[in-house]
Length: 298
Image 1: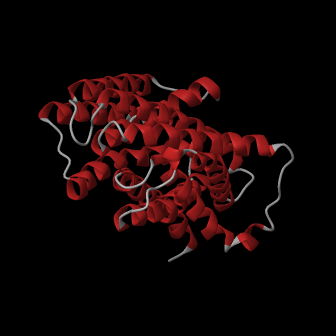
Image 2: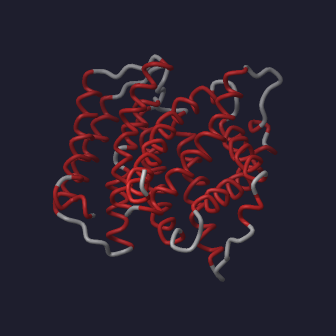
C-alpha cells in the first residue's frame, strides 16, 4: 500500500476504533461501579494507564516543550479526563448506559457551537438547526425515561452527562491547538498522569476505598478502562485529530450512540421504551442535519 493511501485510511481506522472503545466504556463503567467505588475506578484506570506508559517514557525524551504550555496542558487534562470523568461517573450512577450514549450524540454539535463562540469558527444555519433538534431530542429522551434498575434518576443522570459533554468540547478545542506542537501520545500520557493525581485524594475518603471482597468482573473492567479506553481510545482519537480537521473527526462520534445501544443490550440487558427510541431518533436526526451540507463545515 502506497503512502498516500495509508495516510487516507489510517486516520479513519484510528477514529473508528476510538469510537468503538469509547462506546464500550459506558458498559465497562457500569460493570466496574457494580463492585467498586466510582472515584476509585477513576483513579485506578488512570494509574493503570500511567504505569503502562511509564514503560515507554524514553519515547518522550525528544519532546520539545514550549514555554508556557503547561497552562494549556493542565486545561486540556482538567477538561478531560478530570471534570469529564467526575460528571460521567455520577451520571452513570443515575442513568442507563443507553441513554448516556444517546446524550453523547450531541457532542459534535456542542463542540461546533463552542468553536463558534470561542474560536469564531463559522457555523451554518443547518448546524444551528441540527443543534436545536438534537438538544430537543435529548430533552425528550430524558422526559420519556422513567426510574428503573439501570436508571434510578434519569433526569439527573442525563443532565450530568450533558455537563460531561460540555467539558469534552472544551477538551477538543484545547487539544487541537496543542497537537500543532506535541505528539498525540505525549498528550495522552499527560492526560493519564494529571488524571491520576487529580483522583488520588479520593482514596483518603472512606467511600473511596474498595471493600474486602471484590469480584473479578469489576477489576477486569477497570483494567480494561485504563488500557483500552484511557490509552487506546484517547490515543487513537488524538492521532486521528492530528491528521484531519476537528470538524471531520468529530463526525465519527455519531457512531458512539449506536455502539453503546448494541453493547448495553448485549452485555447489560438494557432496553429502551418506544418513546425513548423515538426521542433517540430525534437526536440522530439533529446530528445528521448538522452534518449535512454546509453544517459539516462548522
